[in-house]
Amino acid sequence: MSIAFAPLLLLAAAASPAPGPAGAADPAQVKRGEYLVRLGGCNDCHTPWKVDRALGVPAPDLTRRLSGHPADGPDPAGKYTPPDSAVIGPDFTSFALPFGTVYSSNLTPDPTGLGDWTEPQFAAAMRTGRHTGDPRARPILPPMPWMSLAHLTDADLAAIWAYLRSLPPIRNAVPPPKVPESALAKLEAALTSPRPP
Ligand code: HEC
Image (cartoon, rainbow, N blue to C red; front, side, top):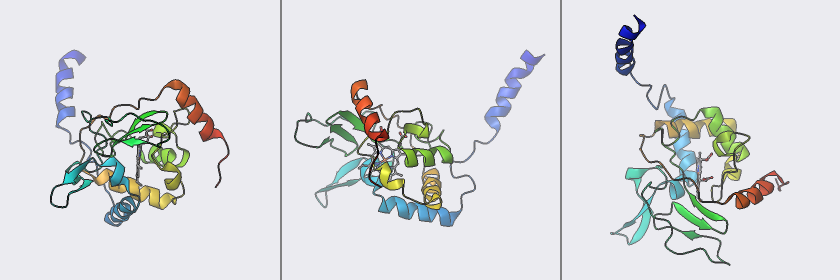
């Protein structure tokens, strides 16, 4: 009997409305979040850039707002060489650093982005510098300036989260960073050693 009902249950599940990314967001909170995201320069690294032909300068491509390094996007063409700090890829979302190559994350509420994250997880990631906010996870890698966001109030972090939730979801599976374990261990030591306030 349960087998006979299974397809019906599946149909019922498919018909029930998916929870909207914005949920019951407070418009004033979302607006505050947008303001903070502009101020925090999140678009500079999390939105792929393209050259604005009219101006002749690169600018974030807002049709791909905050969707991170494109899954099929290029690495920086140049190889990292000392004493540079980094070589940045053509759309400003890939960074070849002394320890490896890092890609900016998809911050939209798609499952390939922050779709499965919770607000406490986001706050924990920004406060602790741990990937996904999990205390056992690897450090969040430079150039993500999480240590600046760590100083925000709970209300401001919640506002940023509310704004990110209100974005149109964009499907884009950003590749994992190409950073060897030995380099991660060094970064781990840096994360756990005392830092100036
Ligand atoms: C200078 C470039 C830069 C700026 C500015 C920046 N980010 Fe990032 N961000 C990155 C990179 C690169 C990563 C990927 C780091 C990694 O893989 O560990 C990242 C990762 C993240 C992650 C995922 C962290 C995790 O646990 O994996 C979140 C969330 C995030 N950024 C939010 C923000 C927000 C919100 C802002 C603006 C207030 C912002 N970022 C500004 C470069 C930047």
